[in-house]
Length: 439
Image (tube, rainbow, N blue to C red):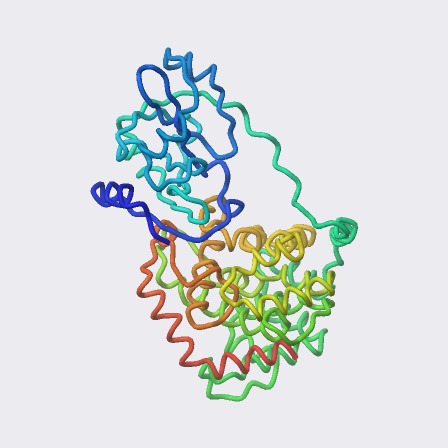
């Protein structure tokens, strides 16, 4: 993903940390996605900076500046911004010798993303760094309010089926009981063991999981209580049971890169990696390892719902992912299905009243620009997915770690890679755990 040399040198000279990624605009919140528009009058060119989803109000800008402006001709754009696509001008005028004026809606953003001169590449930096680059810019209000967000685009013939999909299946009874227990002020192991024991299949899976050599327990695991108290601990046992119980009643093919076997392998590695990486995060983030584990298990839940509810499209998608492993799964989902797994997974998590942290992780784990409520869990799962991608596992968009995202997490990328690489020394044990959950 080459960066325009003028912009690259300018960012380096100011010590700006940024992240580049191949990413669709839909993954960055439009309020933080910026663009530049080159305007002109007899006094010279002006670069107007505004959010991607806002419409320039030329009359407001002219009143603000006391100038009469029009769009700059293509020849001038090519001269001032060589090699840049006129539709994707970077919202940074100083390195190109152009005076700039920015709309105030951009000024307070925590993070700014923009196309650095061409489509297909997104550059993200902190809002503070963006404002530092705009030290000589003027700020004001000169845009119209954003238009309502469009409805998700659904291919012909699928809309009715997607509407049926919105009538979501009920939460399994065991998962309901576990959510109730999780909400209690002082839950105990006996209550958890009693709920799990009511479901013989779930009980067998929990015991089988606890018997894995991965945990290094040297004694015998013969009961639910022993699995919880001696090996897993209350939080992991509860979150494991909740994750497994939640996936009940969804019929999904076992084979293929998106099949049930692959889902559970990715889920087990993701949950274990997310929990392990918590030790590297600053205490100020107040990340709960048990919640990180649960979000790791469930963040790709929408894939299961796709396979259960849209079987014909899922079969095509499964085949396409197998044939094109280097393409982002969400891009293939948009093309072949019309909706993406974070979207429909969030529908179900919301309908089932799952914890807010889980809802956010399911919805935003492909969005490196997300910094809203509970962002740490979504961001952590994105990091995990990309680290696992470097080992050929999962559906991360690629194996790069966005600098802005790791900075937001306070995470050292090198240490994170070492932790995840270490999990693959235990791959045989984790694979056995995954097979037990998929059974």
